[in-house]
Image (cartoon, rainbow, N blue to C red; front, side, top):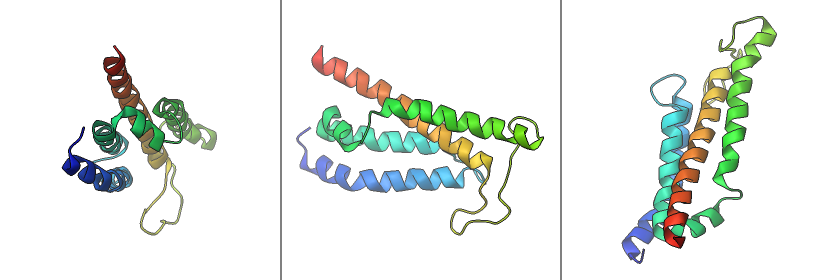
Length: 139
């Protein structure tokens, strides 16, 4: 797209939306939000950048293809689900560190589950949308 307004806005909105998505991710294990909503916000940030600079320009921003986030996120979510079994608790029970971390708060397996969901959502949404966009540009 050749709009100078959209290019300028996209340049500033990408880091702001990514920070906001991380805020929603970290807020999610105490209040509404979490990995799914945070992942959608992060994906929207990259989609906006893709509208402005094209899919190839946006993929150059990323150190790896977004599809690589899917197995990483699934592995992290699965690990956080089954880790309590090794401590004699049922699957999907929460394990918490005894001391809160400043700014983040209490860290437990629910946060790692949310991070896994966050990565899966970003990977799936961007892989689907970028594949459709590249197919429509080439086809």
